[in-house]
Length: 82
View 1 (cartoon, rainbow, N blue to C red):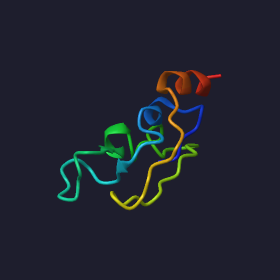
View 2: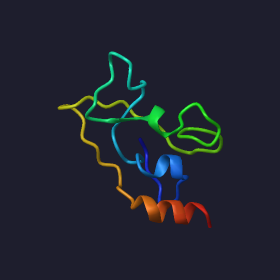
View 3: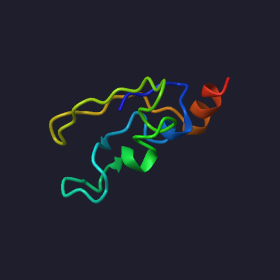
View 4: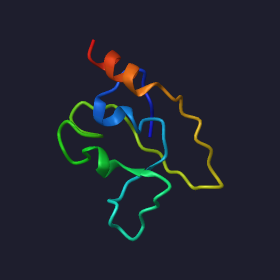
C-alpha cells in the first residue's frame, strides 16, 4: 500500500505496508499481513474510502521488495488533520 506523510487514521497504521485485500476469514488470507478489512475498508471513512489517495500494488513474497517510505502513524494522522 502506498504511503503519505499525511493520512487518515484508518490508513495511517497500515500505509507503506504489505496488506491483505481479503477478509481474515477468507481461505486466501495470509496472517503475516494485516487486512484492509481490519481498517474500515468498504466504509466512507475507512481505508481506500472517500478522498483516500492510497493505492495498492501487487506483491509476491520472495519476488518483490517493499520499499515504501514508513511514516510514523501518529505524525501522519496529525499532519492529516492540519
